[in-house]
Length: 232
Image (cartoon, rainbow, N blue to C red; front, top):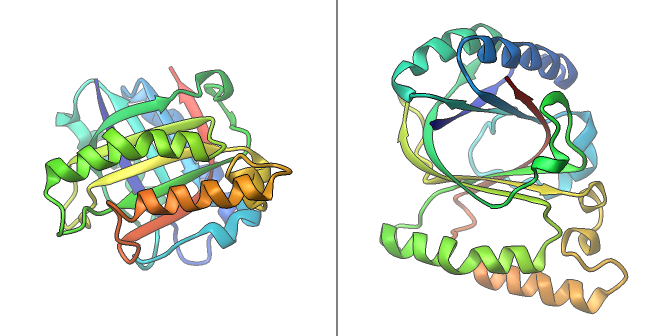
């Protein structure tokens, strides 16, 4: 089985709630076309409180993300034909997914909203690091730091294998992190330090110190979203 990821851009003037409802409908169609599972992550009113967490270097950043689990990426265009009429623009990527924290018990497959927020992060490998070293730092070292310092209950690392669509921007990885609702507006909640400012500062420092080893912050996009999952 292979995983496809599609960043999506809405039509000008479209409300986030309208985009969400249409993409949930498309998600059901994608299941009918052969996808085994679909995940929709969309910027909507339910994550408005998390707006200060947003980091934008690619402009315009996407308004939603569709993840599809399919038997083969060979026929990706059959899925894109269903997506294309509903968005102003889309890009597609084949990825290799690693899931250090599974959140299956908290992610119903009936299309209902997952609690809290899903923070979607687009990463580019800094030119200063060879690919092997970048992966070693990120997955071999930083992963545990992220787990130890943040209040995540879901964590997925998607290494980009190749672009599926013409002129898709270069990304080396796309990360999905699930946080509790309180983390949208509380650094203490985000850094698993409710009621403990000293722990918050220590966790924040540890996280930043780890990130600078393999991330250039002028080449990263961080987008808080609401998450929905549909299974066959």
